[in-house]
Length: 495
Image (cartoon, rainbow, N blue to C red; front, side):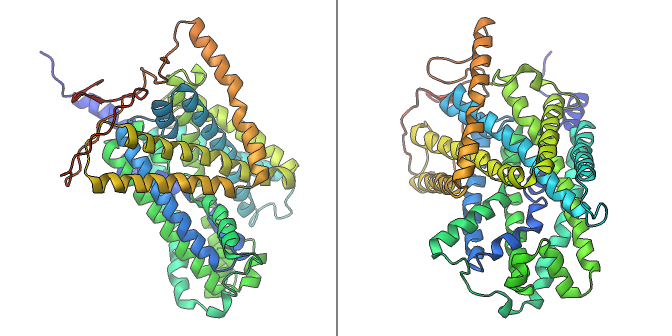
């Protein structure tokens, strides 16, 4: 006699290979808040307090994206995030390009994070900044998170919670205590950029955007999260809100405790703020330790994500098959290959720092925004072509959020600058030959998964969304012919 209820041993095994809401929220916060936040006020000081307004606008855009990711997770369940959404909505090629772009973002971003982290380590050791010792420190910092991840997904989730708490406490402490030591004279002119207000907002917004990269990580790992339909949207929103509070309050506190002139020249603004509040240099050293902890926590999260995205794509034949290899629920092959690439890029950054490091940071922003844009477009596509019945207020709300996320993505793409667009576009299109090879290989082996409508039949089915409580007025929306639908004529398709 069969039963649909899983056995206790099966449930225990599944629990070992999944994470809950706290760990998923910590994954978002841990991936978003790295070492960059500790230098963010200095980068924004050139624009003056108007950058705080830019931060608020970027926060609104990021929250719109967070809501979109939550909606899409319910509609298209499984790991892969932006890759999964683009593939289900627009076909194999769009899915592959998103997976490729995000993968480049992840391992190149890890190289940028570890270089910044090494700078804080060298507050205590290698103060002469010998290049080869810096490379050794950076390499160790890159591979410690690999060891944590390969020990199992539950260990990774637990480490994320610990590192998130350790990084948030000092940042929140400075943000809150600093409010009591603010001197209005430190803020300087509202717009000190020397340009008009719109240009200042755009410039500061581009910098602030880099601080929010990673809000989608819970959706990328959705297949590893328990009860993803409820946990992933909450984790994404909770994580984004937590980061926003720390960022805005922290930047405001630093602006008010360190003069604008000094802040422009500072390499460790939170350390300078701590020294201004408490006096001496001991508090600044504590903040440097917090920056190291924050960087390691960030790398632990991104080291998992850098393997998870190509892992999901490889299972669908959209990435080389080797990336689908797992051990203890962890995408081992993707993590190892990606970390090797990040290590090589780090060596290149240290041997040619002035050209390469800046390009790496800009490239990371450019390649990250493309999957954001496709995700917002996928949500708009399903809203306009779906079969879902909804009330006018709910439809208008979802449309407004999706359009805001799409417009924000275009604005962010524009703010990355011409150099990032040049190198980012080149890197983005480098994936095309790989896609051609993968497609030819699948067809030769009789494994081509795409249909003539562009929808991958072997992808996770698009799930029907539960009606909202206030759905009183029904809107019949036209049926899309080129999207994997979970609901057709009132009956579910797929399992």
